[in-house]
Length: 427
Image (cartoon, rainbow, N blue to C red):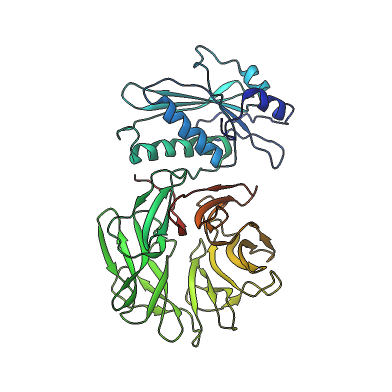
């Protein structure tokens, strides 16, 4: 049994006495509204289920909810689905604040019933029609979306199971689901570095190498089309999309590099954002409101993180020499909630992942073991994907920035430059 599936007896011993209290919210679609001690997670008992693909469905749901790091999943390995009214008091003694019933219908649809234990009532019911063939990537993504709904009903925060991470492997681009399944090569891409997602989740940008140098390419995954948007000469790399999806910013130059912005529609040429005077300026990352951009610059003789208005006005030095033993910070990633910027910083000769609080400029180091680089935030502004050699080779890992919990996402051939997608609405 994996550590994410806790036997009821152990859960009871660990969670009995936890000060859980239910709200009296009765409107369908609102979250449970549990109040509990800070730093703890409400218990969710996932009942056994029947159906042609019950084991797969339940395993995906349980893993997704566990990986969300907001819920304590109670999922016994064996048992039969209960019939008749639930014994809410029993589940309460087992540490559950909520109980989840899952039923696979004959036509393949999945029905969910979420019970609030404290109020002894059904909180939410919903049936999901699933037309994709079982155990296909589209079918799995449909189950992931159910997981995200459940997490939102219980905690008020939508899950991130229905997302993918794009990354570089073997000089080209690959994708993997948030749980580490469904690894596949991105179609149509030859050479590919520095992947970036459009907010709609259907368009990507990346760096491409050709005989005449490097270029930034925008690719529509749904239509299978691609076009270059960068200059014909010089280095062109590290693209990122604005939050509204209308602008692409990337680094370009011959003698040094600067940030340039180009409108994706309208035919206008790139507009210069930074004036680095021969220094390297790269790795832009937009603030959630689109008004500012974090980037790395070597204008002071060493790589540091800066913030500028999206039009290039008011550049400010974000990182300082007071953190770490060497002045090298790069690869900024602005959190979707706007509160932090993640980056890599050199400490004792190795790169580590850190985040800086934009309110008070305090810095928190998140990794210690191995060399850790290239952070990218998940849509929940809590989880990060990053490159690490802690397993003996460079692979992608996922980190919960609140608890410090980590899990390895990729295996096998070296993987790096992870970019977390927005929440996806298409398979």
